[in-house]
Amino acid sequence: MTHYTRYTRLAAAAATAALVLTACGGEAEGEGDAADTEGDSQEQVQLRFSWWGSDSRHQMTQEIIDAFEDENPHISIEGEFGDWSGYWDQLATQSAGGDAPDIIQMDDKYLREYADRGALLDLSDIDLSEFDEGAVDNGRTEDGLFGITTGINALALVANPDIFDEAGVEMPDDTTWTWEDFAEIAAEISENHDSAFGTNDPNEPGGFQVWLRQQGKHFTTAEGELGFTAEDAAEYFQYYLDMVGTGMPTATEISENQSAGPDQSLTGTGQVAMAPWWTNQLPALTSASGAELELLRFPSQSGNSAENGLWYKSSMMLSASAATEHPEEVKEFIDFFVNSETAGQLNQMDRGLPANSAVRESIMSDLEPADQKSADFIAAIEEDVMAQPAEPVPALGFSALQEILYRYEIEVFFENLTPEEAAEQMIPEMESELQ
Image (cartoon, rainbow, N blue to C red; front, top):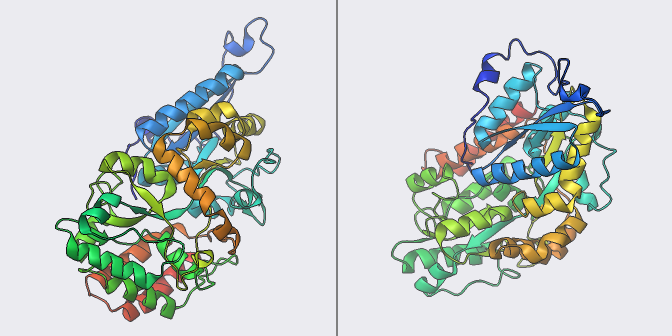
């Protein structure tokens, strides 16, 4: 799903990128600087920190930076932020020009694309003793630890109880329901309700990952290859095609919803009873819809919630440029960001449920209702998650697979391709991105 703010301060940097070929984060220059004032024995250090997100995340992050600078007056951090799509284009340009930020908000889909070419700093010596092993491993490759998980989330079905009530349909028992149950409930709601659908398009690639995990497979493997066959993909496409126009909207409406952010989505506008979202998006969806939204586990093939395919995903990570001139100060800031209760209180659940268990405990009594629901859901599915294999770190080239999957999926929904045709054509295109 999309994010909302555009880059506000990088135009000048982009215009001069050809001239800026050194790593960012140099020393303050010139005699008479703070570094040279009488009584100040510490070198003054400037760092840059980039992230994506909404205006509220920008404000929270700036408050964390301010708190860190108060404790570390010799370090100043310049923030740069943008929306999801623009962020990655900008980071690619900066990295290619030798001007990457010192501290980088990272997504697991892109981790290997930067780590495997030596662009990220190994962060193995940051104290992660309060982290679950799985949260740590989310940022690890065979060469080191290149991403520190800020928070964890999970893919869930966000349900609108008001629509269920208006359609005269009971909320399902999400510990026992199957994919057949899901399709029947979605169709019943669509038939009974005048202005809402039972469900909408999958949230990819997470939806397909859940489907595959229920069959003991993965979207991509630990070896960096596709973990599914054309038959697997065709079965998945067929399942959702059968719901188009019944439990789901029309292909045209699905196409419009694919590019909508939370506020403009069918969930945010109160037009769908169940839709897949990441748990940390519940507050924004609740605010937009005006409804008391709930979180449901995905249905399973067997009706056993221990086989529902859910896993804990790093909502995002912090990485660092391998070319930074100040690696120790960078690590100091990342340590503060993920391990201090001060940062945790400011960040709350914006970047997922804190990965540090002590920080997580410190914020629980202060959470807003929607955040509390997300935290409770993450805790409630722990037994399910622990009963299933971990999800491999996304393969090199993974970031391109999302667009490919969405493109073939919508071709199936418009019936321009059969599920089998789409699957057969999609596989080699995805494989070429992983080579």
